[in-house]
Image (cartoon, helix red, strand yellow):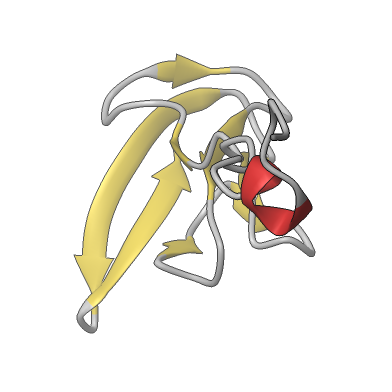
Length: 81
């Protein structure tokens, strides 16, 4: 008899690595220029004043200031002022 299982069963329980998504700063926190505020898939958060959105939907700071999280027309908006 074989000591190890053969075929696809041997590598069936391998999980992919986490992508480290989510909020990187909190409301009222001081940030520098270029600081990453949120990493996300899609636009759960939208960029406001003083923030930009990257091509992978990452929101980052354009200016140095305080993070402000609010709602505008039902959307969650992150600004830096």
